[in-house]
Image (cartoon, rainbow, N blue to C red):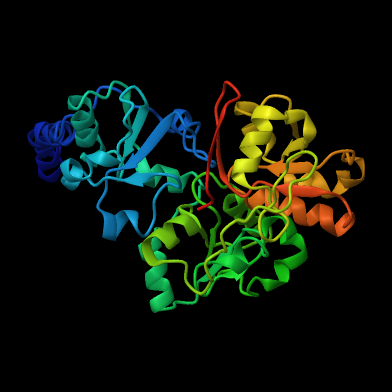
Length: 375
């Protein structure tokens, strides 16, 4: 054995304990939460529209982490300010909470999960692989309204795209500088997209319950665009933070003369008023036809009884077969897709008596619904 070889052999014995100790120290650097889920389990929860049975919490700092990229649908409660933002957690302490942060070496999600447990939450989990794993797996990141505001104030070439219907949504209020490519008419209006497919595209729609932004993002990806993000909190978050922008406030609903079925329409003649819709469901449900235009997965998860389902993207091919013996009313989760359904029918059959519910609708598994004014 040469002198150099002998030295290296001895050095390996000297360093081995230190290397092992360093690895162990890194492993024990923070206390890991008791319930950790992997990516395969997590992705079943991290869906758009967001699930009602879970809240996903980003425990990272707001400005430098969450704002510039987070898992779509996640709320932000930075661990450092957990106590000050604890009111963002659900009142139901049995609801599933999934915390995440910056990966396996990040302690923030674990710390936040323990804090939630101390408050009495009984179904907390940690997605320990966190945001790095989400991105590495090919998923879209979402930006916040604050980040979008910065892009508007200091443009960097990004294109902001409103995936909602034009007439009843975009034209009545949208994020400044955003172009409008309604998801239903994406293929017909894709020429609005920039020629350079490396341009960053940021899609938004009607909030965490609205899938139009995700659908449009997928269509853009299929066309070869390589830098796509979501602003999943969407127009409701923008409006809450910065106001309605250029759009005038929508006029208050006024009752039109009642028809035989006691259906009252909104000021533009295309919507059924929320109060009228509720009254018809309670007292004369057979006086109208109802059609749910959400996606099949959403419909299967929860829907009103005795209601049909045709996804809005499939409606144009089936307009001729729609019933016309009674008024037809379209419903969805936010009013966006149902307004597109209205426009589609009117293009094909302009004389057909059809309306849509412009409202936020929360569908319960037992068939019940909660209706709120549009955001």
